[in-house]
Every structure is written in structure tokens, then in C-alpha cells.
Length: 322
Image: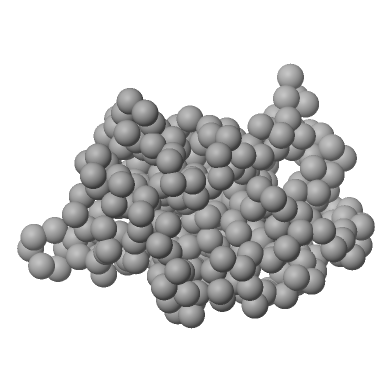
């Protein structure tokens, strides 16, 4: 049992929530990326990781799936470290949007920036700003340098090496015409440089990283622990930028469901179209749920229900403590 100033969470509670929703048949598996359409709609897991390194999980917690848009949180952190707040803010805003995550028109009318780094346009612009850990050609970071930078950063969060699912990557690459349109529109307004194809490949690869529910819980717990992985002790992101990530997650992480999420769950959160959701209880723990069927907003149906119940039962909402 995890004892906090908030109500305790134990395996019995997670098991009860898993039993409550495992037969839920609402939602549909994402099909606009052909490989994702093959996912098992019955796969379902819940995992909690604390800032002390403890972990509880139920269900299919070792089932691998691609991280998809949850990756946007962590690449945003990389871009902040590489470029700083002021430069990044000149390229990507931090305003919530009521439009779909892949809306073709999400550029600010005046600044021409994408609204925020959690929609596709903002995430592509963010990935464009990521540098490499090293340079190999004497002229600047290559695509390989930049991919290694991404892989190394995700390793620090997850505590293990993560790998790209090549089938999903190629599926996204072959069908990502809308994302290409967004990238070229941003290039027209000088929100991106000329490395459009390279950046899109990096973006598709980061979305195709394979994780399980335990990985996501630990990655969320790393943010809850001010950027330090609770199990390895490795710092994944400088502490000064953790606030930025949590702020954007809270206001923008759940797309055009972000307002209701903030109202009902009250925690920084992020979803992905493969069915993953993470939520961060600052200073306490990370929560992860995996279940592929999605609602109309592109969020896991079971994942949202579990997070709502955990927040209500355990008094996790940030404003429960006011």
C-alpha cells in the first residue's frame, strides 16, 4: 500500500478498477494508421509508480505498444533544454485549442506558431528544434545524431532502452500526408527549417517507440520526481523545465477534452492514439493506463474512466488540497 497525505492506493483498488472496466466495450481502435488497427481492443492495464520507486500494476502490464503522442511531452522537454524557453516559445505556443489534434489550420493567425506542442503541428515543430548529443559530420547534427538524442532521453525516463517499431514507423510514414502538409505550411511561415523529411521521420520514429504500461508509469513518476528517475536515480530533464512540461500537459495534454479532464481529473495528463494515458501527481507518483479503444477525442475510454475514478476515490485532484 502507498501511504500519502492523499488517500492510499493499493493493489486491491487497482484490481477493482480493472474488473470494473475490463468488459467496457465503448470506443474504437485507431485505424487511420493501418498498423494500429491490428491492436487487441481487450488489452488493458493499470500501473502506478511512486517517487520512491515502488510500483503496482494489474492487467496486461507487459504488453508492448507504441507510445504515439505521449512522446510529445518528452520531446518538448528536450527542445526546452536544447533551445531554451524564449526561443521555443517563438516557434511553438502554449495555448489550449478546441480543435482536433491533427487539425490542418492550427497556426496562430498573427504569430503563425502552432498553438501548443501537444497537437501534431506543434510537436513536429518541436521535433524540428531537437539537436543531437554529438555531431559526426562537422557541420551539425545528422538525422542519426538527433535520433540518438531522442533515444538517450527516453532511456533516462524509462530506465531501459526503447526501440522503434519499424512496422508502425513505416505505416505512419506512408500515410502521414496530413502531417506533411502541416510541416510544409510551417516551413512556409518559417516556423521550421528545410529539414522537413528528416524531421518528419524523427517525429514518426518517436511516436513509434515501443513501451509497456510500466514504462509509462515510471516516465510519469520521473516527472513527478522533479525530473529524476525514481528507480535509476538518473536525471532525465533539468528541474527548471519540469514545471513547463506539467503546465502544458495540464492545459493541452488531452486535446479538445483538456478542459473536462482538468475539471474531472485535475492532474497533468497526456494521451496517445495507441491507447496509453499518463497522469502525474507532482511529488507523489505517476499513473499509466493502457487500453486501445478510443473515444471521439482520441483518448482511451477505459483510461479516462480509470483516471477519473482514481482522482475521485483517492483525492488526487490538484485542487482537492486547497
